[in-house]
Amino acid sequence: MPEKIFERLNDASGVWFDGTLVERRRTPFQLLEVWDTPELGRVFRLDGFNMTSERDEFFYHENLVHPAAIAHPSPRRALVIGGGDGGSAEELLKHSTMERVHLAELDPEVIELAKAQFGRVHRGAFDDPRLDVTVGDGLAYLRATEARYDLVAMDLTDPVGPSVELYSPATFALVRRAMAEGGALVLHIGSPFSHPERVRSTIANLREVFRVVAPYFVHIPLYGSVWGFACASDSLDPRAIDPAEADRRIAGRGVGDLQFYNGEMHRAVFATPNYVRRLIA
Image 1 (cartoon, rainbow, N blue to C red):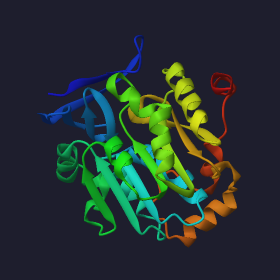
Image 2 (image 1 turned 180 degrees about the vertical axis):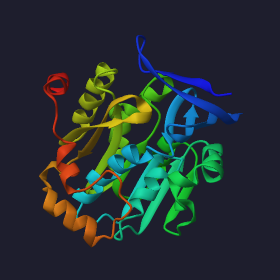
Image 3 (image 1 turned 30 degrees about the vertical axis):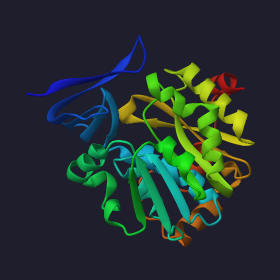
């Protein structure tokens, strides 16, 4: 019998789906759940928050990765902090220029669950020889690494509770140290309608560290709202790439199986509504 799967967006509103529980496990770090839903296929939840689904994962993963990756002239090395479902790594590995993607995931059981249950999200990325996986604290990895990356994707839970530290200027400074010249950080920043202060503070924290901060916004069905992302860099500005050049780079790198992203959408996602302009001014 299907149940109602609820997630609160804030104290006054939320989103729900019908679903049937497939698996629930408590790890040393968090509660993981897998649900089957008629609307979104298989859904992954973490501590009661919707993370990704089979049918709409492309809204999130394509937009997290490709605006910055296409803006970079030749991304060769990338780091994913979190992202244990493999969706972000899979999008990065679509670029023929990409030589190495390193994924640093805190919870090994997230990776185990993704491999078993979410093949339609990672699409075999964990078997790609260009992918390296480190199990452990992403911040500890950033502090220790001497590697330099063209792209860093922070594919993390929302900035609530202990995760707030991950969206601080101190963390962004660690990321900046790990970036190669011309590199960029990409991350999600929450809903400007449901989480306005979260969006405002994250953009402000990014601006403390980086010279170029380019926010952009996409509706994500699983999250029940328009969702914000940001690309941050000292020099790379994805807004400078026009649709024709974006399409040339997509074709030139053999980036295929795209369900959302193309040259026109590259430009479109950076169009900012007035209420958001005021929020992050």
